[in-house]
Amino acid sequence: MTTASEQRLLRSNLGAAMLGFGLPLALGMGLQVTFNLVDAFLVSRLESERAGAALGAIGICDQLAAIGSIVSYGYTTAAATLMSHRQGSGDFVGARRVAWQSTLAVCGLGMLFALVGLFSSHWLMADVMGAKGLVLELGTEYLRIIVGGNVTIFLLLHLTSLQRALGSSKTPIILLVSSNAINLVLAVLLVYGPGEAPAAFAWGPKLATQLSIPRLGLLGAAWATVIARVIVLVPVIFITVRRFGLFRHDARGPLSKTLEKELWGLGWPASAQLVLRIAATLAIQALVARRFTTTTDQTATTALGVVFRLETMALFIGLGWGSAAQTFVGQNLGAENPARAKRSGWIAAAYNAAMMALLAIIYVVFGQPIVEFFSDSPRVVDLARSYLRIVGPSYVGLGVGVVLGAAMQAAKIPRLSLGLDLIVLAGLLIPTSAVAAILGTSPRPLYWTIAVAYGSFALVYAFAYHRSAFGQSQPPHLAVSIPASIDFEVDQGFDEQQQARS
Image 1 (tube, rainbow, N blue to C red):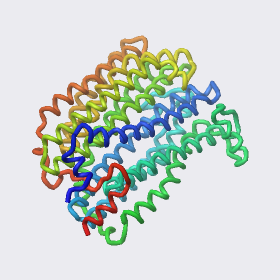
Image 2 (cartoon, one colour):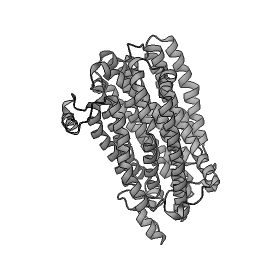
Image 3 (cartoon, rainbow, N blue to C red):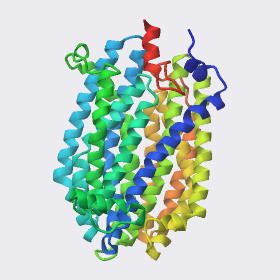
Image 4 (cartoon, rainbow, N blue to C red):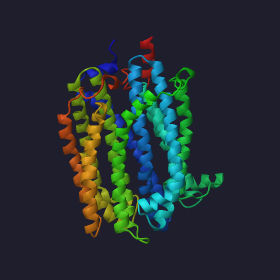
């Protein structure tokens, strides 16, 4: 029996179906970034002698902390893929065994990165990133808290991804957005405490005084993030166990080396690719910190901290369209329709390119008031505006690369996608940026190297995607199969699937 979801994914008008499925994902991912931008705004309104350094520190630390999340998320993506395959084939016990074993592995990763955060934060900030002065001091403590508590985001992303793999399209998004909303409230209380706060958050100091919450500044933002994730993990775990039946006794069998090998075989190329992208960003930040800052002048680092936060919006919207591409490509390859699968990637990339063009126009036209929202330093505003004017238009190319790379992962050719990133980032961006930093007297020439690299993503990925042969490069047992019960309108796919199976 053909469900409405199957009809939309496999047979209906592809352009309309992709728009209806991908646009909410892209907007939802963008909404999550908005909460992070609010965090940056809160920090930017601290006392002037600390605000600039705090912005610079948070810009560096967020990129460092993202490495652990990316490694974990690559593994999570592999687990969700295997769960979807087993669920779609009717192997419900096998799907739950994947959930159990992968969750244990994610917990292990969280403990490993916690040790890194607790004992290596100063080394990462000072020796690896070249941070100086107050940026180094604040960043070390912030990184220790965020990376030390990274297991919370590992589990949050993992468990909500497992729910999506079982057909839930609505609950995971609500839970993730709830986490960000709680984070905002806690951040107002912990960042400002009983002290001065912006007028929009005047309620915060009053409540903090009543609760005897101290003013923690940047460290308050770190603690708010970790605590918010812990709070939301409680209902996430409850829903995962009670509604979806995961982690029950029949699924908690002995660990399988074969399954673990399959999980890591699927997950490491995706993790490596995303780590490479973060590493390239960190390399840019390190070059700027070492070449254009001093212990008393952190302006260039502060400007990068602002624009990289804004750039995250472009990346996350692209990841939303990439997720849509993965679903359509995987479903249609599973249905032995490689032509439609390949077209899905092109259409998702086109939609994302249009959104990136709109975002670039906003950044270029309204760059000054946007940057001034975070910093009123004339030099910070000048450097950040220059970055947005130079790099902003190239977000179109970056977005095309992100979406087509996600489609390649769904087609089980992730190593090709990883190789393309190596060509652009390691072969083009990092060497040219190093030369620009060494020869330049300001960061602006370095901005042009970033713009050229981002634009190159579109050319390299479009050529490789056009040449790739979908449906011929992956072993049959690794074919992507997302449950046909995914519902685009209401969050009832899992229950309907169970009834259909019965």
